[in-house]
View 1 (tube, rainbow, N blue to C red):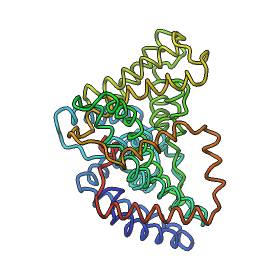
View 2: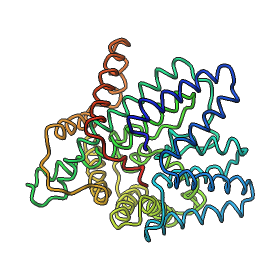
View 3: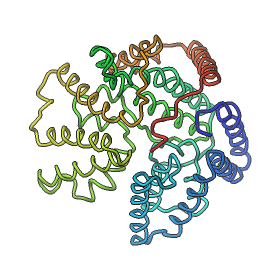
View 4: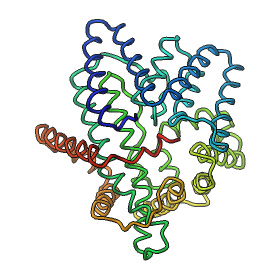
Length: 403
């Protein structure tokens, strides 16, 4: 069972949120225990291997405590297992990568055993993050605003996944089909980053929305990345929790930008190579890391100077590099069956392109101008459409849940 299923959305999540909402007002300790049990049930329903691996790993992390040598050894063992499990097809439950990143956060800022289990088994962030530091995880008493904003974010995320990402999947696959004319293949290349964005941003919005139902505010993961004006700017806006994790746990310990341009370039290259391999030990993911490292390093060394270009040129440069990189990224994940794009795919592409074109400030103002009653009605319609699509056609798995 995943976060996106009729059982989860229509039964498990409402019952869990309602139980926690009531208990948090009268029995806070019971509420925390209830939340942990809900997470454990979710993990078991997702697969007993995942649940068992998560429990053993969290207990090991707790035993390490603040012993730095043990923590470092455990982190390395986890990282090597994650890498070799993918190379040699060892048992490797989906979503384990994000659990491992959370465990590294636990090693830096240890919690008590109950808090460790509560943090590790918090199911909204289980499969695909965002990567949450222990100090950012603070379950509280959800307010009525938390419930409304949580449902709002959850429905928007669900809509991004089912109505946009899954529709764009068919068009994105055209990029790899030589039988199609080049204009269609070019549209497929443009659809690749949009598909990944709406898939992953959709999951993130669902995770943040579900977390708000329990009074938890998880960190944001995206900040309008397609408004970026350089590749360095793009990686400040895309998958921000992973970028921050790699910065704090790898880039800065390696010396960051404090030891000259050559060392900085090497550190950036290592970080992006690791980021590529984290997605999987495949050549396309490795090329994805190398491609992004190349342009970030060229910008850092001021060989490329987007800051001196006009705004349209900066955005066109960034979007071109991003599209080319995500074509590599999508190679292992897309089914390349020869199917022509349909009307939903083209409609989703138009909606995605609107995201690219609408200015950043304008996009923030548009939702605020919609009356609350109309907004609630629109969200209800979106929810009904999504549930009908989920019941009728199912859905493709979340891309990042497989990492």
